[in-house]
Amino acid sequence: MDSPITSVESFRFLGTTITQDLKWEPTISSLIKKAQQRMYFLRQLRKAKLPAQMLVQFYTAIIESILTSSSSGRKVRKEPDSSASSHKPPTDGDAPERAGQAPELEDSFFNCDSASLSSFSLDTPSLPRKPRSQEDTDSLVSNCTLVPEAIYLPPAGHRLVSHSEWDSLHAQLSDLQAEVTRLESEKENLERDLDTQTNQTHKQMSALQTQVETSESLLQDLHKSFSQSQSAVQSRLVELSLSQRKVQVKLSRLKGGEVEEGPVEASALVTTLQGAHCEERLRIEIVNLKEQLDAQTEENEVLEVQFSSLKTETERIQAQKEQFQDELLLCRTELEALRVALSHVQGSNKSLASDKATLQQQCLDLRSQVISLRSQVDTSQTVQRDFVQLSQALQVKLELIRQAKSLEQVREIMEDSVSEDLERVEKAL
Image (tube, rainbow, N blue to C red; front, side, top):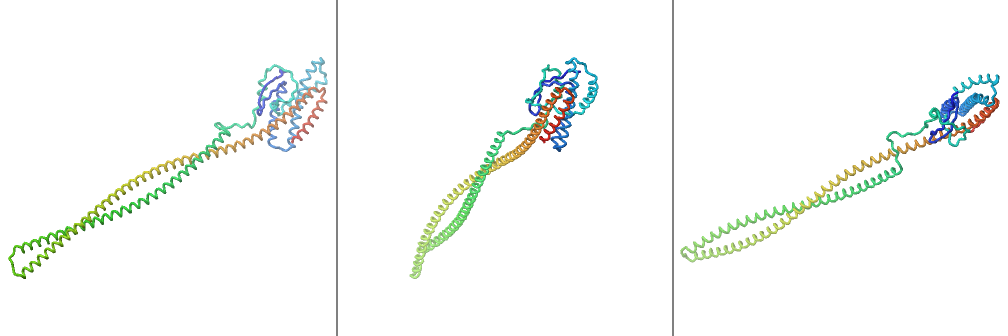
């Protein structure tokens, strides 16, 4: 017979570190391997939520097969030991009994599916074992080490968002929204001011344009009246100079002619008086025309002064218009810059909103995963608890079977254990 297997090993199952001192014969180690498969099917059946009657039958088959196989293997293993300790050779009646148990033991080993002993917890009461050297442990560790089921592994590159990062993102989003609101209010105020200034500028420009047109029309009228009066004065002066020459010619003729008779002298005197009178009238008219010319000259000077002042005012208004146009251009440039900034802020706001929606969806996914993990952990803990209770009961029954002295006691223990296990399973269901 091969040497017994001793294992002291720490291994993990669902986050729990379990340390056990195991000492098994080769037949028991093969039984453990089969038990792992059976308990795997047991967990699958429990997850499938099958009817209670089927689970009771399955539990009964597990308990009977494990107890039968374990008791048979223990009996076969202990008979040489008991014979050696009592120094009594085996009787002939025991030989056929052992021969009948050998194929039964072999069949029970191959028909047992089994569970893993890796679900033992640290507080599980174990039977007293004799400490052995830690040799040949790799095979049992490789057989008893389980990979936890239903453990969530996040995908590569996946990052969970902490509460502080979530709060900071919310704070940044609120700050950006406040900044967007402030920029929108500033943009509205600037647009309102720009519209007001534009309307005022248009009104002032229309008023100044009207004044300029009125001044230009007045100036043209003055130029026309001045040219007309000047041409009238010149024509009048020409006429006066011609009449003066005629009067002088007539006077020279009167002075150089012979003395005629009295009627002729009287007519010459009348002509002289008329000439003097005409000369005096012409002088008065010349003086009046000079006064009119001076008055028109003064009016022209006043109009020129007004024209120069209007021209200065027009230049000032033109400069003010250019200044307003420059300010309008600056306002439009600032408005375009604000629009660009607003578009950037809106884009960042949209990206933050999409990031927020993504984070919320990830949060919902994580919550659903946490809920599913909790349900899976609860299910695994329930299965682990049931299996721990079952393994404890099996250890106690195996120890009782090992200490039994006859096959009848073993059968009684098995029947009692089966009835107790059935009651326990029915209560659990």
